[in-house]
Length: 170
Image (cartoon, rainbow, N blue to C red; front, side, top):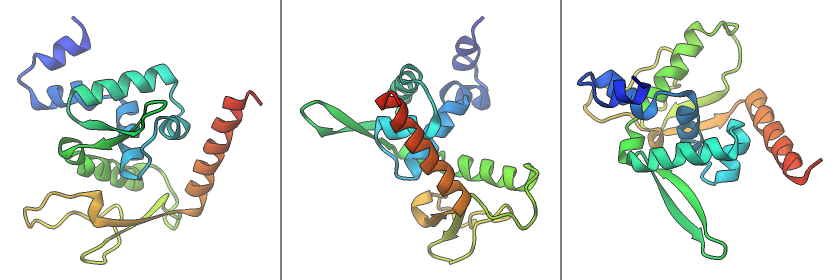
């Protein structure tokens, strides 16, 4: 029995959720969307995915209603990708994965976070111990101001440069 058959046909909500978002590539795509990266080449540059793999994952996420594509150029047709409400409901999952790594990832206690996050309304720093308020409103990265840390910014720029160079055949 295949993974999809096990998960899609299960009554277990964890298994069914994993059938949609249960691989690292999918969560990296969602990370890029929440950071404002919307275009295929930009997502590919930051995730390191092959064109085929990225295309496959985007189509699967679109079919599942997690993302939608929006035309930004008619000639040639080009699309941007945006998280739907269903996709944005995964923001808290990504936040908790970030917190888990900050706690258990073996980083030095005073290490600069990859992304400095502050909750817009409360102005509180979002670190490994921060949790959303229990006010019934779901967590959303729309409610967060974030600034890339120096090292992470350099890492992302290096990926962008390397990707462009590989496209030019350098």
